[in-house]
Length: 123
Ligand code: AMP
Image 1: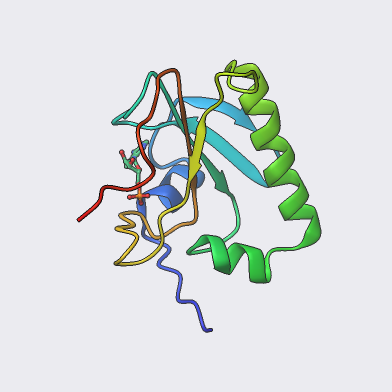
Image 2 (image 1 turned 90 degrees about the horizontal axis):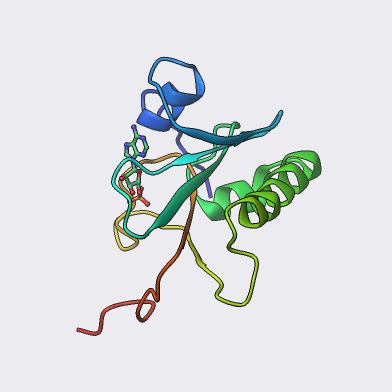
């Protein structure tokens, strides 16, 4: 699969420092910040700094160092935000038209702080 990355997307602009964000944690390969329109009491976005469009693009082409950095950072953020306990959270990644992805730079939504309902709406 060939992935075409659009460097004008809003998360690329955030990563370049052109747009402000409310950072939770930053590492060499990963930025985690608060979603501008939170859907739950806790709603943050974990974004790899590399130019990846979707979860499968990241999984296929990111280096081991990037992948470990990303996932360890998510784990630390879950701990910091109090999500790692028994109440839990939800991690979601939307991809493409069927996933209704708005921003074409891979990101993991991490939501918590309330019961989140079922995973998807039924037709
Ligand atoms: P998705 O539909 O999975 O691509 O989700 C994109 C998410 O990015 C949405 O939840 C938006 O609220 C969020 N978002 C868009 N622009 C910004 C921004 N400037 N800062 C933080 N979150 C944003």
